[in-house]
Amino acid sequence: MHRWLKVVAHVVEPSHNAAGAVHGTAISAALIAVVEDHNGLIDSIVAVPATLLVYWIAFSYAHFLQEGIAGGSPKWLRGLRHSLAEEFSIVENALLPLLVLLLLAAAGVPIDTAVWIALGSAVALMFGWGILAAGRSGHSGRASIGIGLTSALVGALVIVLKVAVKALS
Image (cartoon, rainbow, N blue to C red; front, side):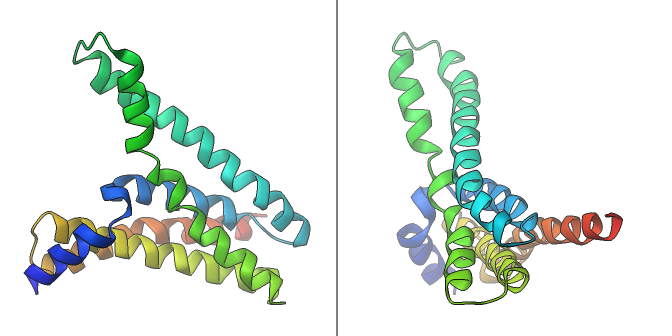
């Protein structure tokens, strides 16, 4: 099982940056979690991608500061572009839960139900990113599943937060 998982991970893993995919998916899920009605859905269509773009730029810049400047490279602009490209999986993979939400809403699924399904898809994606990253690193199938479950737990924390906020309001 170990060998096929590593092969699949090299082919499928998001931009070879599962960390960015997990970051973006968690942010996307947190933003989707606050959608309560149709107006909230319309706001999310703008807010989720805009927030992800800002987060991507900030995270990439922080990565550049850590790696680019610390390395002493005189070609700092090239280093910044590299960081932006390296971390783009924060945006590209995080839009999947929003797409799930929009497709369900367009199909007439009630917004509250669509939100819960989109959050479930975010947890499933985070599970997948964890498994793929573990497989790519050469972990056994059992360890990969454990790492995937740990990633999914991070996504589940967003759901716990949604339930807690709703209970307090």
